[in-house]
Image (cartoon, rainbow over all chains, first blue to last red; front, side, top):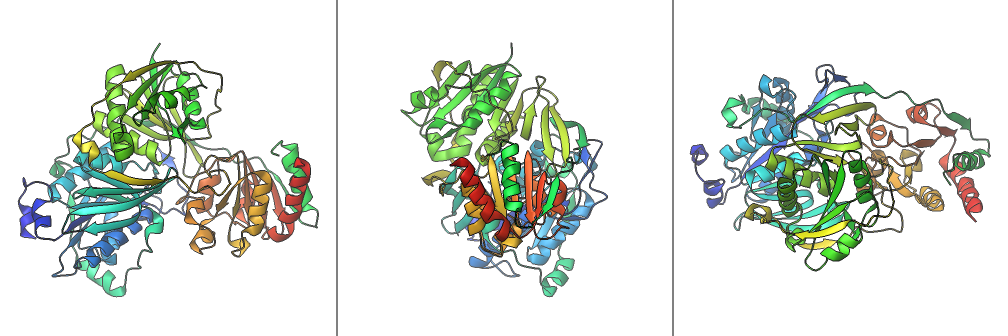
Amino acid sequence: MVFTRLFGWPFGLLASNLGHMKIAVCIKQVPDSWAEKKMVGGLLDRTNVDAVLNDLDEYAVEEALRIAEAHGGNEEGGANTVTVISMGPERATEAARKALSMGANDAILISDPVLAGADAVVTAEVLANVILKGEFDIVICGTESTDARMSVVPAMMSEKLGCAQLTFASKVSVDPAAKKVSITRVTEAGVDEVHGEFPCVISVVEKINEPRYPSFKGIMAAKKKVIDVRDFASTGAQFTKSWSAVVDSAPRPPRAGGVVVTDDGTAGQKLVDFLSEKKLI
Amino acid sequence: MSTVLILADFASEKATKATVEIATAGAVIGEVTALVLAPVGKGAAYAASINQGPVTKVLVIESDDFVRHGVAACADALAHVIGQISPSAVLVVSHAFGKEVAGRVAMKLKIGIITDAVDVAADCTATQLVFGGSTTVHSKVNEGTAIITVRPNTISANFAAATPAIENTTAPLSDCSKKATITSTEPPVKGGRPELTEANIVVSGGRGTNGDFATVEAFADSLGAAVGASRAATDAGWYPHSHQVGQTGKTVSPQLYVACGISGAIQHRAGMQTSKNIVVVNKDPEAPLFELADFGVVGDLFAVLPPATEGVKALKA
């Protein structure tokens, strides 16, 4: 879309005036959640484990595709575009490729050695700057990454962008003509109906949808899609300084061996005796 | 003595146990001031409910925008108060709302954030358990104020009576904090059981239940426990996703965790490994979760739990 190349226009203005939506999905490549993870020098050892697209981001990719499909599609000639945005080592192109094979149009990866060990504030600053330049209408994220598990980056991006925060959504409704978005927010505090306008940052919980498996056709098509790898300087982000850092880390000692009994009809009572002995009843 | 600011947490218009926990954690660092963000007309009642824990002062801001605009409006107010009183640390409860407020404040003020601390030292070093509790990490904010979210149920709360000085104040809220509007709020559905992340006892069921949670629920109810489920059980539609314990679900650290028919993939261990006592009931003696068990039963949960349920009831009677 040629209009989006005109930097300096108000965020999202041109794209949404045409009734088209520019949707961004923020993803992260993480160590496989089934793998044992270790700390090396205050950082997560990412080199010796399988790296995958964060489980929870698959729901965000799926929701972005569903929103696009419900309002004119994102195939060639479709009304909308779905762009994957990520920050990480060059290897993170693999996670981006997975999202592309699900059906996203293109991807932007911010990869720069100066960003190694970036904390959440830096991550949000970089991603928000890329989003600002890209003039996206809707930004969709998972609720957290399965490695850092902070759940703060979507809120931070919304703060930085000065736009509506529509997070922990179990349902998203979009009205492209009115540029309005409504969500059902589900947290331990209850269920809220929350409304906002374009542009906005959404995060989706895992019960929102069932992410599609990439089709063979999708995988082949993804090989030809563009992953635009950019350095830190290109983003316009102001800083790379992380405020928080790990002082030290250690594996926790294994639990002392417990008692295991085989049920001979009395194990239920033995269990009660154990709980009573430990004053847990 | 330095000041520590805590964002008081409320449920049903009363300060929660988690508020007392973060006050207790804060008192290790300095004198605790609690910030109360309340709807108009409720400030005094909210503040009065902070009657336990080492809190010396309560600051009250009333605005209906806290209800209408949620996280963003509360973050604006907290950031404003931080600017006014320059605390050495800010402690917030580590739930979805608290983490998001902390995140926005960190972004706005460009200060360091640490989430999910299970302990905080006098020099503001936070202890975190990461990778599903398999690794202990100490983290610190290098300069300036640290904003730290503290996981509920991990700090042993000091419930001593408190009579803090109460002061009303105001905070300007930016237009940006009002971009999302909440039109309705339903409190969480209470099934008569305690909330999973706050419960002292959690009884969970997995694949071994074969979809029948009645036995697990009966045992949970005899103990006054919350009910959890493995991902296998929630993915199969046997139990609601909101009860899933694990890497992609809730993290719990109760006094007692009872895993029934759960083999114990890393996915699940990540959510329960920090429980103080772990009981495992599984037919398969090779189930990896037995490695974590303080007490394990190799047996069918449908044979083991009913007599245990009766035994607990008899003890309590």
